[in-house]
Image (cartoon, rainbow, N blue to C red; front, side):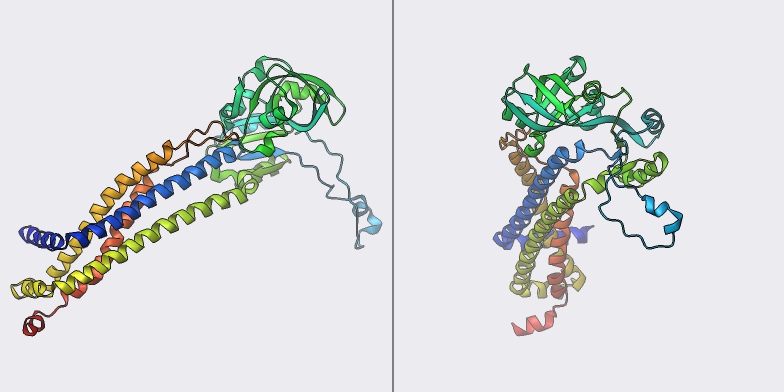
Length: 420
């Protein structure tokens, strides 16, 4: 223990003898870790925001009936053409039903699955909005208001009005803000909705929502399941989509395949539906890590150069240490201590200033008409960024000091003293 304290005192004395260079190296590590944490926090905060806009509103599994051609065409079923090579052109979609057959039994079965967090039924209606002389093409989703809000944060995107009015007020609609602005519609106005089948219904505007995607807000609106069924003139069992949210997102692809075979419906998992979006998030995170780690490596080279110069300047001191009984391992430990002290000091202040930089970014106003709920720039304060930054900073400085320290440990004191 006394020997360690002696080595530490020598390392401290050598560091203070060149305190400016030591401070520069520590500042380099501090700056690198500060930028690493600030950059990772901001980029992952941005990814979280985009996930909230897209992935949080997307079901982990969606059950539906897709419009597609019949798998087996009549000519393939005819026995006289069984051994022929049949070429069929201009195949048209079949007249299959869009609604999910036996939806109540399917819902009950899925709700008993322990892997499932919740289910939200939905009806998609293609329609035209009419107010005065203005007509706009749109899509109306009939939803279970409470389930949609609990599972997909629907209430967070309703910027004007109360989302529960869809359930409490008959024949009501919450319009996309962009579509309402286009039609000059206000809260309390009555618009006429015409479906593609010619069914017409007057609906009262009780709110506006903004998804953050203006192209979606130009056409999308929401109403209750009962109102959507009334628009289409169908029974109360008519459901076109079952939106399923899981407790574990990673199970979605396998469970989608399982439900597809079990219920004989089309099933789409969130990974397949948003593969391109997830790739973009991964690339942004990868770039952030690459830039941050590059900064830390550059700081490591700075420490390496400073310790190399210190060794050349302190040849006499190293020779005296060895001549007075210190081993090559002791000398190596001294210079590794210098490197680690630089790394630990830089890491401590890097973590502190990285956190302060993140707080500063988090306070910068962010005003966007497309995302009214976002008031400041998004920042992720995940503890793993701080752990990675500190660990990588210390490891980098250790490696940067190890090579010069090994060189110092091999110095022959006889050659140095004889040269003097």
